[in-house]
Image 1: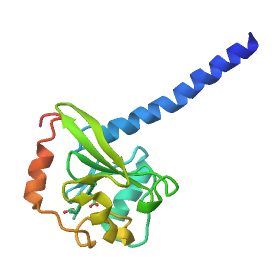
Image 2 (image 1 turned 180 degrees about the vertical axis):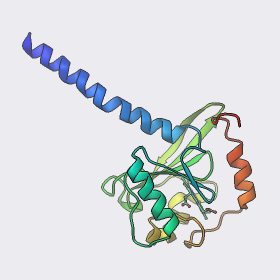
Image 3 (image 1 turned 135 degrees about the vertical axis):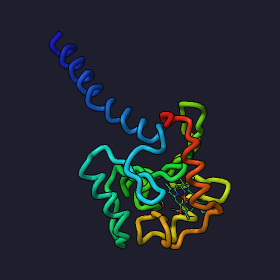
Length: 167
Ligand code: HEC
């Protein structure tokens, strides 16, 4: 009896500990792309305020050879996301996991993820790779393959994200 009770307690505790974190992670990856701190055209999110500040600082400073903290979520357009995991999980991209989302109305589902995801222009890593000194973040002037859209077009795409509250 004691054993059963202990097992149940362990299970309940594990559920309490693991679920909110996973749910928060999913919501931040799958939710409105215009959440977080906007630097230039780019949105940066992190569940931990200090680490968010650190990530924003790295992006703004343009410093080389600094890694973004694990848990950083970066987004430019509504259906593509970069999430910093660990180097052990994604050694080819210094720990970044790339996502392509299917956005339909208020919801999004994962269409592809990992370090080999690609969009019609190529694999994410093929363009982001040259920015290795900037931890694979392209921004402006980090050497990434060019994308055929202007900032104005990016802004228009960002404003069309149906998951975001009307403004
Ligand atoms: C053709 C090259 C190319 C491909 C392929 C590409 N990107 Fe990018 N990506 C860029 C460039 C260039 C920028 C910077 C744009 C800017 O800030 O003006 C960028 C910016 C981003 C950003 C904002 C942070 C940053 O690095 O500046 C994210 C997030 C992103 N891309 C995710 C992805 C994902 C996910 C994929 C694959 C599904 C992908 N990209 C594929 C070239 C590419």
